[in-house]
Each structure stands twice: as structure tokens, then as C-alpha cells.
Image (cartoon, rainbow, N blue to C red; front, side, top):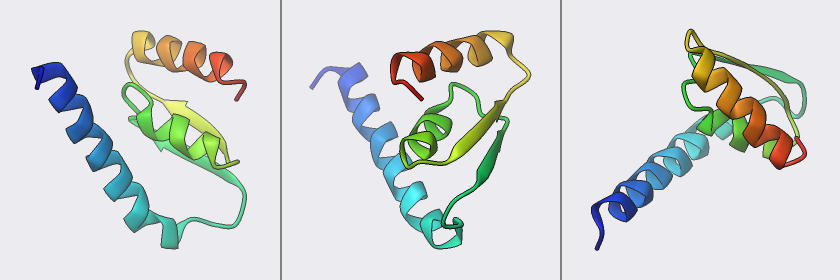
Length: 75
């Protein structure tokens, strides 16, 4: 398996596992703050679940990147 593909699968597993465990603490609806959101993986997945999400990161590059991804996904 190509290393990059293997890492993507690992990161997807980590994302899915984390979301599974925090699901029980998520409200039915509302606004979520993703502070220190980095590349925005959680921001995107939480927005796909119907939440309003604010992505906050010290890196303007990460903020711009997730802004584009959210627009591409109509979120």
C-alpha cells in the first residue's frame, strides 16, 4: 500500500473514532467552536452533520483552506 494512502486511512480511522466518542456529548443542534482546528477535518465533518461551526486556528493558511473546502461542499 502506498504510504500516503495508508496514512489517509489511519487519519480517517482516528477521525471516525473520535467523532464516535464525542457524539454522546454533542447537542441536538447548535453552534460548535473548533478552536485550534488545524486543517479543519473536524470542522468539515461536524458541519456535514448539520451544525453551525466556527473554525479557529492561528494559521491563516489553515483558515483559508477550510474556508475553500466548506464552500466547495456548500456548507
